Each structure stands twice: as C-alpha cells, then as structure tokens.
Length: 366
Length: 128
Picture 1: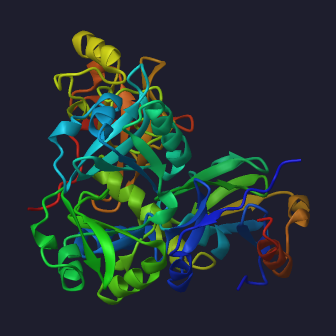
Picture 2: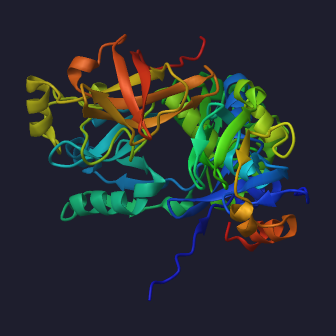
Picture 3: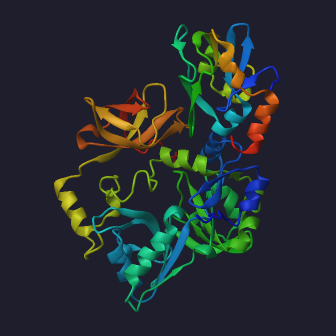
C-alpha cells in the first residue's frame, strides 16, 4: 500500500492564500502558480516589481579549510575567483559532464560557501555533495534547506521598493554580489540575483521572519507573482530550467552554457575529460531559441522535424506576454542552429513553422 | 452560475440546443483552469464530425485544451470574434465566448449530458 505523500508548505503559505493564489503541487511543495493571472504578473515584473516565494529551493553549506579545493574539483566554474560577497552560476555534473543540477555558489568567507539548488533536486544534490566530501576531514557539508525562506523581488522598481526597507548600500551591489544585512528589521542575506532577466534581489531570511518581510514588500508595491509567470519570464530571458534545457543527458556546451566551464582553471574537475573532448570535437546538438511563425504554441516534447524525420525537440515553449507571440527553446543539430534557419515543429500531428532567433529573446533596457 | 438552459459535458463544455443546431462553448470552470487564452483554433464551416471528434483547440499561456463535439453533425458557424480576440473566452465563456454551431441529426447523443445542477455538483465534487 503506497503511503500518501504529504505536500510541504513554505513559510509563506498563508500569505499566498491571503493574496488569492491558485496553488499547485510542485516538486512535493504546495506552491502558488498564479494570483491575478500569469500575463498580468509577468507584465508587473517587467514594468514594476514582482515578488516570488522560492523558499522551496535547497541550501547546502560547505565549510572548512578544504571547502574551496573541494568545490573547485566538484564543479566546472572557477571557485577561486569568488571573493566573499560574490556568487556564481555553476553546476553539479556527472563524470560524463552532464547535469545533475544547475546551482548558485555563494562565497560567504574564505572557508565557507552556500550552494543553492533547485527544489526538485534538493535531496539528491545534498547527497551528491555530501558523498563527494566523504572522507575529506576539512570539508563539512550540511543541509540547511529548512533554515531558509527565500523571496525574489524582481523588476525595474525592485531597488526603489527594497532600499527604504533594507540595510544601506543594496543599490551598490553588483549583479551576483551579495551582502548580509537586514530587510524589514530582520536579518537577511541580500543577493543581486534573479531568474527573470530584470534587475532584482533574492532575500534569504529565517522561515519565521518570512511572512512579515513578504507583507512589507507587498505593502510597498511588490506584486505577488507565481510559478506561471516565473516560467514565462525566465523563458523570455532564455534561462535554463532543469528538466527542460538541462538534465542528465545534456552538457553545458550543448546548452550554450560554455561560460560555466573553465577548462583552463588549473585542476581536474568532475566531467572535465568528457567536456574537453566535446569542446575539441564539437557538440552533437545545440540549444537554440525560436519564434513560432504559424498559429499555435510549441511546448516541451514537440519534435523538430526535417525531411520527414525528427531531428530535435523543444525543451520549453510558451506564449510570451512581452512579445505576444509563441517562443521556445529547442535542441537541434548544429547545422540547423544559425539564426534565420527555418524549423518545422510537430505540434500534435500538425507542422508549425518556426524560425531560429538570437537569444535571449528579452534584454532589459539599461 | 451555469445557465440552466444548457447541457454540460464531462470535458467542461456547454451545449445549447436550438432546434436541430447545437451551440457549443466551454464553461466558466474550464476558462478558469486554462488561464488567459491566447489562441483559439476553430474548425471550418462545412466540416463534418462524428460524436467525440476533436473540433479544435484552445491554448492558454501554460496549457492546451481540445474542443470535442458531443454530437455528430456539420459545422454551420464558428465565432470569428473569439478567433480574433481570445480573451472573450475568459471574459464571457457562456455568452459572447460561444465557439461553434453544429447542425446535428441524432438527439440520442445528448441524453448522456448533465443538466446545470448536475454539472455544478460534478465541478464541486473534485472529480472534474
């Protein structure tokens, strides 16, 4: 007899119900998919500021004299380039150089890092990191996912809304910079990061403090935004989503994330040999952005067809509220990857014409 | 909430019978589940379908839903306004958001459909 799985609630659950959210099951958590509507929330982020609950994400602390060397060998990006107060985007890779997860690594101190991982992979990622650290006495790995709530405030007005409520100086934070400070009177790690293509901040606070911070930000003009808008926003910014653009069959090179892989960083790292070989030989497929030219929306799983055969597939697709057309990302053979190339996408048995375009689709005005 | 002169299907469509013509649309529940509709694909006037055939599709930002016909017959009219302005489906699914008119030959298919109060129960029951 199967045990009923209890869905987990984030510390902001009541806030979502108060705001009229439609809740769904996501990665074992009850999360808001929308409040007033995906399109309205998307536009609020692009023109003002939206507020997302991403407390379901996981946090793993890696600490000790051996922490830097450990992470340097575990991940493809160059950890030695991180100074305290800086984070970078990276990955956990298999020996084949394929993705276990995409992650953010925050350097808190010379010997202390916070690794932030996707909700859908949180348990697995912690085990992955902990297993790799086994037997290394100068590396301590702890799962701190239940010690953090995480709010993402995103949009051109994010700074204007946050600054009066936060420790001075958040405006001086560079992209991917962070500082420990306060928001609405409670301790917070304030990071200038996000998943929308807009300016914004991610606020790591204690779970008990989260509802008060949420309410203050909403009072100050932040618009609650759900997972639906989160997906349309990140897709317009051509940001990868695990399980779509990246998974255990894809390398960073195939996904266009070459910059995450520092082959020249001076040491071996998990997956390096395969990645170096792939760089030398070329990738077997490439992730491209496309615009649909017909009527309809291409979505994950729809095949890219050429001369009667399936040659690729759509990893993500949606109707874009900013551009008011259907956009998507797809893996195609390298010869079909140049912008301007016409594609044919099989959508439920019908062929939808599309064209490869440069990504990101959206770049925020600067 | 659900007009009593209509009949309802388990796929959240409503049907209004006017002599030998069925007017077909999706219900308030369906539009709410779909979210903001961005594309509607309707059949051609003159096309002939069997009971249960797929007539077209409704696409929202995050989902696509098929439109099925509860009767066998011929499409005699489609709502061009909805094609041009898909938001009509969200704003007035039981009225201005009607989708398709089908001239049908056999009323026997209609006897399995739900009345308004039964549909309301169906939606509330959570089986929907």
